[in-house]
Image (tube, rainbow, N blue to C red):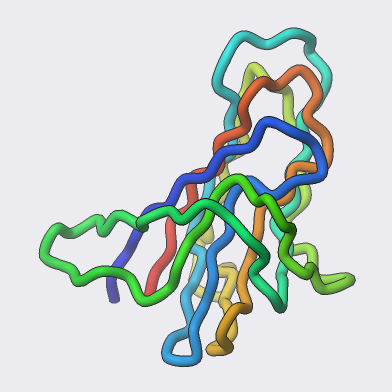
Length: 148
């Protein structure tokens, strides 16, 4: 199985920083992600980010997932950053929800296989990282590791 990294950014609240979008051909697995801030922090107010499932991908700037092994083919899943039209999030499917200080980071890793966030083999379904509170942050960066 190949592992890919995709990064997304966001500078406003209630907007998605990164999406990982599945296809009917595969079931991508989120095996880890990190959220951090870039820029000078204005206050120590928390940033809050939620990893949520969606059923329609919305409109984002395309991101090319980078393979960890240069011998791997291009990813089948797609990724997007900085949503201009939000994904259609599914109620009660928040996978992770965390507030953190903008001077720090939030790092999550699946410690075993059953911890992974598994996407369905359904076109346009996936997971998005929604910035719900920006706090003292300037630019939120989400860096996800995806196995397919």
